[in-house]
Length: 456
Image (cartoon, rainbow, N blue to C red; front, side):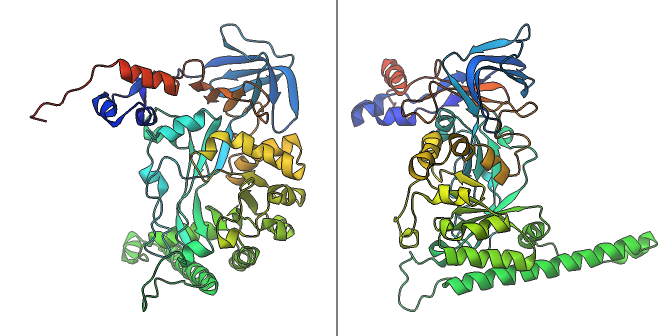
């Protein structure tokens, strides 16, 4: 069985338009990685993200799980050896805000689209997934867009590139949903004609009203179902149970009931401090927690409130002033929130940035004086905590999934590159065998030109 590596980017750089028309665009094949039954990474610098750094350490992987880690670990007989001499091993990088493996991720028609699901439209063949593997990324939180106050349901995936699409799903990850505040949901960027008001809400006040109305309806919907279930349980005969009429099923409200009951995590697009405080008040009034505020560029202004509410913050390293509501963003944001006790992550919100999140995390050290381990946690363990998967991934500990990135140098050094990326102990990216852009171009140039017949 093989997986296909699309050659689109190489084709785009392969020469003139006439040359491109003549090139055969057959994809390049790569072997599916064998299962990680018994693997040992030896003599490496292991940055655990939870228990410091281990010099000249060994990691033993058995059946996709970390079986042992330390300096005095015995390598089992028959294990596949990966020589880590001079290299650094980190937990696989987790991107807490991604839009990869999906297209058209904004169902921008309604203000509430909690019924739509990212997992139903996942694609396993996006070349950006392979590029992210080349940057040590192993897990993504794929979010709906930010066109709606209450958007669609998320998908947490592992980058098992080349396997069937169902293999991407991170089994057991808590489900989530995308909320959004600010300019995007108010559609202030739309060029409406005179007399056109657009959809509700058009103001920040309207956003709060929409949230409160939606959760009030969700409470009533839940109560209707609770009453029906109680009557069904109390019925003494099959005839009595059959006579009961259940409430009409509402997929929009089903997801919001899960939020009320703590079964679905809220990931809320946000910028301004006043709106973030509003969202915290709404969540408190209806008895749920906002798992993460995404972007949260003014989070440094209300870090204490975020920490008290138990809400995480997933932000950019140093991007600001790209639109009006991002005007007060500062590059110290991540560090200041972390110092106040907020669980902070650095995310990509971008296919391109997801390939170098280790460099983005290093900026927290540069700007805010964040410690090395805390910066590493911002792209590993903290992200796992925000997604509710920290018992499985995010740090190098016995019993956790063997999702690892092996670097040629310290991951925060400018010259560091990822040598290998493992998921469940399987090597899904190996720089030594992965075709380079130059090799792809050369392979295509060596193929015979395809001449179309008049019948085609």
